[in-house]
Image 1 (cartoon, one colour):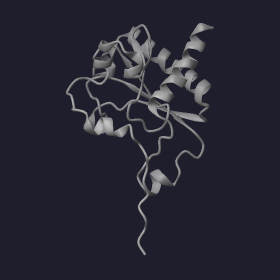
Image 2 (cartoon, helix red, strand yellow):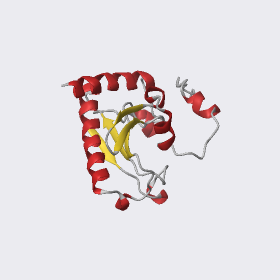
Image 3 (cartoon, rainbow, N blue to C red):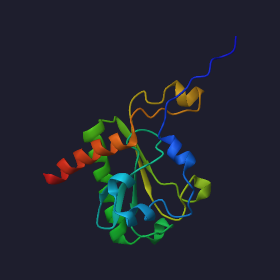
Image 4 (tube, rainbow, N blue to C red):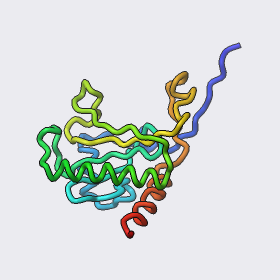
Length: 167
């Protein structure tokens, strides 16, 4: 008897599948629109901002990017580097407070051969990790399960961020 196919429910993926693919920058376009909740912008700093990854590796996957559209890490100004690090630290605080991860993967893919999906705009990934979060799904089925809708994750992180910044 053959193996039965498992079905995963991920209704938010249909928006991506049916949406027209644009050549615009995934970081610059949301910044210009000013609808932060819809665009998943969690925080706007002085030189950089925090945005929830629309197609995450795991729940709470954040990205921090400079406002300036620049593709080379070594060309960032000292002020941009400082603010990027401030927002990476803020991302960690928010994720710890709102989601209680056990650890993080933090990094940047610089250049296409290094895995950069967006080469033209430097950005850092902050991926929360939990003990046991790599179970049989990614290992055997090459599939990740995201158990919470993006807008719910955004609202939870945003609520915690607002309380944190109000202190």
